[in-house]
Each structure stands twice: as C-alpha cells, then as structure tokens.
Length: 202
Image (cartoon, rainbow, N blue to C red; front, side, top):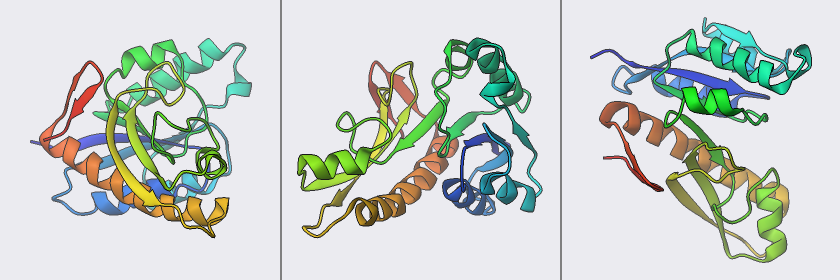
C-alpha cells in the first residue's frame, strides 16, 4: 500500500506544515506531502515547501469575481493532486460548499482552544478573559460552521496565573503541533470513521 497523499493549505509561516514535512520523511509515517496551497503570495509556508521540492500553488480570493469562483478553483487545484487528506495548517480562509462537498470527511483543521468553547481567531485570548484553568487545542473535521465540525482529538494545556495571551498561545502551539502530527499519522496508517459527531481513530 502506498503512502497517503496530503495537500496542506497555509496562510503564514507554516510551522505546522514544517512539522508534517519533517514527520513524512520517516518512511513509517505513512504519508507524503504532495502539494502546498496558499491564499497569498510571498509567505514563509510556500518557501518551506519549495525548499523541500514540494509543488505549490496560490489561490487568492481577490483574483476572482465571486467567492464561489474562488472556492471552485481552490477545489480543483487541490483535487489535481488526488489527496487522501487536506490539512488546514494555519489557512485563514473559510472554504465554500463545493470544497466541503468534494473533501467531506477528508478536510481537517486545528484550533488553539478546546472546542466547542472559544471558536474563532482569538481562542487563547478569549479563554484567558473567561478565566478558564484549562486551555488546549482541538483537531477536527471542517464543516460549514466556524470551528464546529466533528472532533478528532483534543489536548489540554494548563493556564498559569501569570499567563499572557502570547505565553499561553506559544504553549498551546507546541502541543497542537505534536497532536496534528500524531493524528495525521494515525489516520493515514489506520483509517478513521465518522458516526454522527463521533470520530474514531484506531
């Protein structure tokens, strides 16, 4: 059986992307990164991919007359690489209906809070402001909501009394990255099932 094919979508520095590239260099990991897509030019994530000889593409919303046209093009660009999984690794655009239909049950994202609490782009800040004692990261399948899809895995991070948004975010990033690498590997090697909202990874 060949290695699973990963398409990774990025918007920034690509640290999660780098972690997956590094993991995939182990022949026992079970996956290979076949392409990296972005919604903007000139970002470090694209440079990381190029440094490893991985094909890249850029699909900018501003280049299309409608969001639907952008979504269709993003879908086609990803589909061209026949991915087994598409991974949002800091991709800051909400995909549309065509993408979600095409990659249903195969598009995953990671979020820096324990969902369903604190969705959106300020998870650690919102968690701190609420006064929680435990924060963390969530890996989940993307649906048409904002951080609302079926949960694959979660990891807890204790909140310290002297935490700032930056210190908490950095500690979450560390465990978030390890969780992403671990579960992508487990999923491609052993498969997964989605029953309603329950995800099982052997």
